[in-house]
Length: 73
Image (cartoon, rainbow, N blue to C red; front, side, top):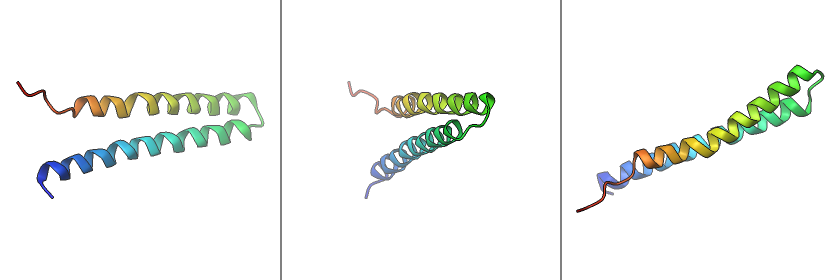
């Protein structure tokens, strides 16, 4: 395996790890909101869910854009 392939695999795993963390946060937010006894806990769960969905949409794309291979002339 070449060094470029190792780097690509490492970056892929980082992006998948970010997605996994975002999904875990969304599930946690749903659990908190679903079991909420008060409005404050419900709002906290909803905020965590929305933040996780935003994280899931933005971070992997930003990492992929940052690590994009430069265009060859």
